Length: 226
Image (cartoon, rainbow, N blue to C red; front, side):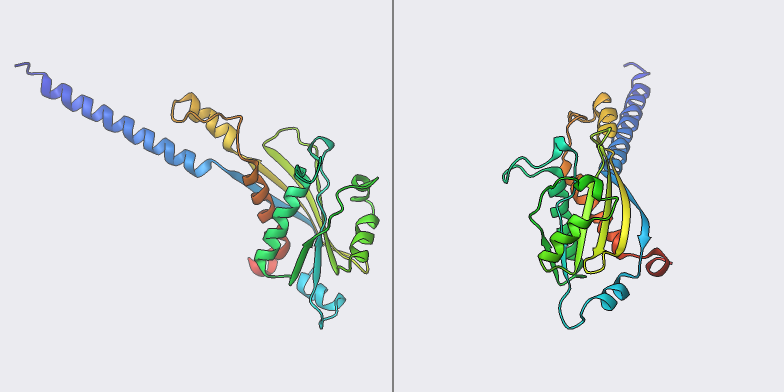
């Protein structure tokens, strides 16, 4: 009988335990870091509730319209069956607004694009206000997606406007980054997953950026988190 066999078995069991622990730790680490990170900086933040009560007839429900977000030409809507990224993000924002139960009526406006819409986002928003006014809305939500240098990073500018006066009630810039490609590149190289790092679900990013936008718009840090 080999006197060193028990020692070898102990060493093998120890190595197996270490490898298993390391693998489980790696999986736990990846599970906690795959996904999106999003933050919003508010440039204009008025007391939303007070502003609505001051500017809108308290006897009638507030009607909020959401325009399809302006997006780069290569991501714009092609037809009704292939809505562009801006439209899809606006749908996600509408869902978040409805879920918040803050506004009684939240509806999408069908207008996709018009000449000068990109330029007017930062200079008056007269076209957006005219569409919302003609449709009978009290408030209008508009958005602008910047041209992205990376597919996994989006920058979205969003405004909430009071239609009758054109006053900006809230204006913020949200930056969302999908951590999945970087983490999957590490995990696939290590053999922990066979998922490709260059393929990920953009729906998660749309939902996350919509949640980020609506949460910041409806949450005043000085009041709600102070």
